[in-house]
Amino acid sequence: MPGHRRLTTTLRSQSTEVCVGGEGPTVIIGERLNPTGRRLLARALREGRLEPFLEEARLQVEAGAAVLDVNVGAPGLDQVEWLPRMVEAIQHSVDVPLCLDSSDPEALAAALRVYRGKALLNSTTAEPAMLDRLVPLAREYGAALVGLLTDERGIPSTVGQRLQLAARLVARAEREGLPLEDLVLDPVVLAVATDAASATVTLETTARVVAEYGLNVTLGASNVSFGLPNRADLNAAFLVLAVAKGASCPIADPTDPQVRRAILAADLLRGVDAYAMRWIRDHRRQQTRSSPSG
Image (cartoon, rainbow, N blue to C red):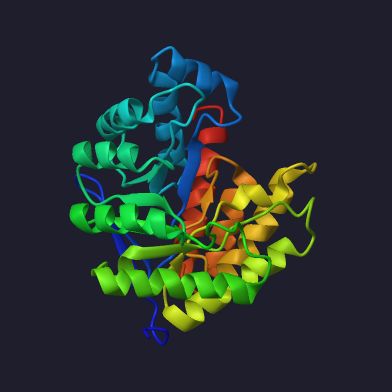
């Protein structure tokens, strides 16, 4: 097992390479290109207007997202048609790697055919039927693949059960020739409003995955605060804990200053921001943007 070293997952756009893990800083995967729960984006998508998505893409990259999650899962929309259309449009607007986010393998395949670079596929589960589709797809296109620690029985409630699914995903990747550095695990974030212990299970699973396999870990950070007030405070606190446990590429909102600064602070305090340069650069950028002349 490669658990004694942290693997590096490399993602690429047409001309930008992003390295996740290793000894590098936390990579923010911008979450805002998603119409779920966002009526204006969903409406724009149904009307065929992509500019609101392209503006969101630009804002997230300016705020520090190194990768963008792209989701077109609006009700009644044909993802096989729209995910590649969105990918092509975003590639002409910003030059960062993309995380192709769909539960439809056909939509992911269609998007991969137009993607220029090395994408991250979001996602498979440990269900055999999903693995049968997604592992060969990732291998065929040279993409990295997110593996959710859930299966046909649902989301396990214990760390041990989630680690069993991690072992299943690792074994399948090894058997089918998908490099382990191209397998990114998602330990699943649930709302603490309905289960106060759920965050602890996710955080401990993260630490164990990193220790035992050296794999990179992503997670949908904002899920933790669903249904509660002051969500940005909770999201920021959770991200600090998750980064400390080894989460290397959380899906989060970089345009939220609390969230962005929490990740930057965690990196600085764990020693991967030499001379505090990223922390200082972000501070100066915000000062420039808020000044009357800026």
